[in-house]
Image (cartoon, rainbow, N blue to C red; front, top):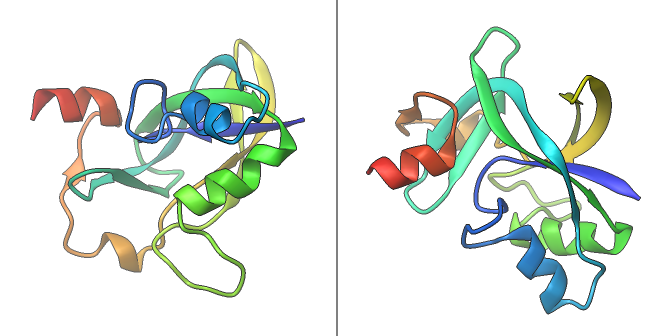
Amino acid sequence: MKYVFVYGTLRAGEINDINLAAARHAIRQPRLVGQSSVAGRLFDFGRYPGMIADTQAAPVFGDVYEIDEALVPVLDEIEEVYPGVEGQFVSRQVSVEVQGEQIECLYYPITHRASEGLPQIDGGDWIAHRLAR
């Protein structure tokens, strides 16, 4: 089993909902562990956000799921993360706190270059930002 921190369109109810992605591929349903945050800067790409981790920045809010290993290639495809190909998103590990416990998670930040010229999302919450537009 793995854990993943999702902060944008992979969150429940969003266009790339992690639960629906698993169901489409007949993969065991992800289990929501809880909410957490990662220090970083969130940027608005229009239909989706991108995050750059930054320990000096405000929190970016998201959800932590326990997932089946088989879901990782599906998430990589959604985020267009392919071996040897430089895209907007990258696959990284981050430690987050959920209900007092530290959990090592997979997550998908963007490259610094991908954020150039994009508006930053204040408040660190993609869903709140999308709904307020």
